[in-house]
Amino acid sequence: MKAMGVVFSNIYDSSLGELTNHRTVASLPFGGRYRQIDFVLSNMSNSGIYNIGVITKYNYRSLMDHLGSCTEWDLNRKNEGLTILPPFVSGNTGIYKGKLEALYSAVAFIDNPNYDYVVVSDSTVLCNINLRDAIESHIKSGVDITIISNKEAADGKKHPLAISVNTKNRVTGLLIDSPAEKGSYVGMGMFIFKREMLVSAIKQCYAKGYVHLERDFIQRGFNEKKLRIGIYKFDGVVLRNEDIKSYYKNNMALLESKVRKGLFLQDNPIYTKVRDEIPTYYGEGSEVCDCLLADGCSVYGKIDNSILFRGVRVEKGAEVKGSIVMQGTKIGKDAKLECVILDKNVTVSEGAVLKGTPQHPVIVRKGETV
Image (cartoon, rainbow, N blue to C red; front, side, top):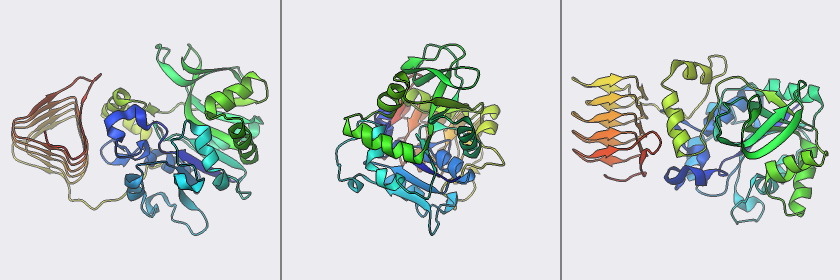
């Protein structure tokens, strides 16, 4: 049994607003030192999946810079490794309308007879999962498609894929963009297919003008009783960065020990690009409470309940509360920040005051001065 992986890097760019104006959602910084794609690549590499294609469309310079030679994920291999699948591969330079259309652009990569199965994944759902177990479960079940899923609270929130199952984990109902009912499961944007079946489905669906994987292929095939669909139940920590609100909330969730321990497992590390930085320096009179700070920071002010990426400088008298501060940002003296997301290389002027809410955090774009 050999499996390959396919990762979507651009599909949900529009939902993250200003944070993805100049980068893919896959390369969006998260948790102080990671990018979102680190999680899916680490999951695949730790599970023995070493031939991975990343489908991208635009704004992928930062993604390529982050991935580099892919040494950190053990993907700098002679015969396998990571392949960037840019738009000109298929000759189609328009914007992808859906995952199925994106997969069609990568069909030449997927149609590799050396692999039996394909794991297709979003880059917005962060977790630490053993995909080897999921693939073995898929093979044993005999279904056409396995949807990796978890349970979420029945709080009325809409999900891309809400799933009802029977006692044998066979799907009995599929709802698109619908709240999860009590006892049902929610898709995690990860699917397992038999490679030959997926290639055939991509070609047939695209020829009929279908562009959405979940709606036009999976749900349609299920409703027409042409597909047998099962789920693989995952009960670990799952963070879905679907929009600005959830991105902010999930970063803040890392301050909880339970979430950190469930996401960063000792036996299955989450890898990222290595940067040689000096340790963080805490100046005289600085105060830091309940925070995550990456290396290379210089702190002279007060920080509370916040996440600081590499190389952030907080001057004396500055106060940062409930905020996400990305790499290279400078916060001036006596500045007051609360519920703020500062992108990379932002300069906050002396005495500036920025205040948002957890539901509507203030966002300052990359490289700006406020």
